[in-house]
Amino acid sequence: MTKRMKIWLMVLLAALCTLFGVAGCAVGKATLDEVLEGYDGHVTYYGNGGYFNGSNSIVVKSLYFKCGEEGVPFYDIQTSGSVYIGLTGYDFVGWFLPETYEDGDHKGEPIYTYIPEGSSEEVAVYPVYDENGEAVTDTSNRRPVFAREGVDEQILENKVTVKASDTQVTSDYMITRGADVIVCAKWVKSLQMQYILVYEEGKVLTDAEGKEYRNGDVIKEELFLGSAMSPGTGTPLELNGATFVRTYLDPECTEEPKLIERPDGYDPVKVYSKYIEGDWTIVSSDRTSVSNMFSGMYDEEKSFYILEDIDCSNMGRFNLNTAEERFSAKATIQGNGHIISNLSFNATGRTGMGYSIFGMIGDGAKIHDLTLSGITITLTSRTNDISVFAVANAVSDKADIKGLVIENVTADLTVQGGSINNAPLVGGVLDTSNWLFGGMGSDEAFLAAYAENIKVLGENTLTIE
Image 1: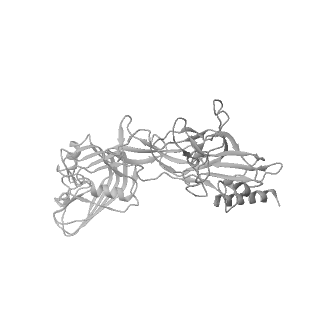
Image 2 (image 1 turned 30 degrees about the horizontal axis):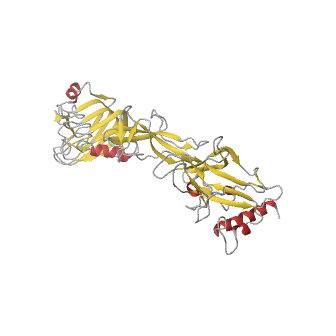
Image 3 (image 1 turned 90 degrees about the vertical axis):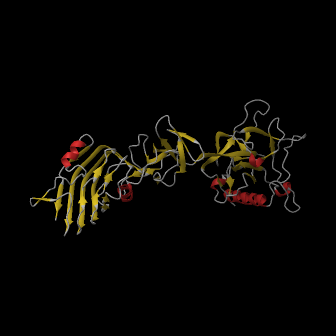
């Protein structure tokens, strides 16, 4: 029989002993000593928070070995295939000899620790011995009990951890006759992806429970899964008074999310979640968010934050707004200097209606630092008394518009049997001097009045059939 097979038989017997309570009590009429006759090596495995074989109760395990003259190699149950140890959220490093006290009354003894109920701080504990110097055991499972100095409290072994030294125990370590070896598991927190808050320095945010967060704080952790992983696109944490913008790969929030390859080691992978003050709707490169902005910009107090340059080439057509339905707007569009390009709008004209991208820009509305480029407007109508302005039917003098740029607008209007009020026939020729902005009689007058705040660039063409 090979030495490896002998070890397997020893482990099998030890497992059966544990199953039937032999490692600390009798099976049938046989005593512990009788069952373990010839098993003259003993190893106690402290899980240090981990559980053996998925059990939620076995945190300390004993195995007995027949050592022979040369002893037997240390048996790593983590790699045995039949016994394993695990701890949720942690990776197993290996088995280590205990760290021992260097001096004092307990010199040379393993350092045992325990976390009292209601506390998060570890305290030192020591095995309890009787007057004969024998370890006191718990009557239910005949395992050692511990106590804190000066505290009348019995502490069961399954609540105790052992401080690990730097000496790892592998199969090179021999269990010799009469050996009573203690080993303990060492754990490292599984690789985490940490979400770091990016917010205005010096300001404080709170979550639903009132916990405070500042710029640079970790607001979320999640296990790094697989060989590569991308940061989540959803809100890492709801924070009062702030809106999540996006998670980036750098603290300056310039490098957009992408697949991150799993690094070596266990240092957390850090990503950076940007938040801005206030209640905002983020507008990014997807049709839904762009459509929601153009259709909902005139809801009272709605605020839109343009996250990036947006190319709408493949987003289809958006609906033109109407002046009558959108008059009292107080919305905010914060463009952040970005460009929304290749926009297409359409509508079917109805008698008495006015159409444009923004409708009526009403009292309190704000549009800041936004460029709309490459706009195509298509309208078909068989009715009378309609007006079509590319940008806005009118702008209130109480609106706040700064840095709005409109360039390269093409409007194709098909009006069969009807007319367009803002492009009348004058001497048999269509007057197209007022089709970009309504409210002042001509585009020239409008742009002169808003010269510091609104600019029209590029080639802008109106066609009416």
